[in-house]
Image (cartoon, rainbow, N blue to C red; front, side, top):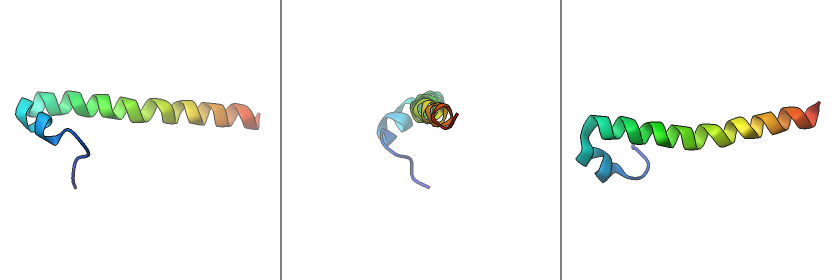
Length: 45
């Protein structure tokens, strides 16, 4: 499975850098999804 974007930076900074960048990427994906779900539920109610 390939990582998306910033692979050179992740490899250069090592495991800690990878974990940190992965956390940032996960947050960037998760927050909009959570907001979208919230809005969808509000619209249905």
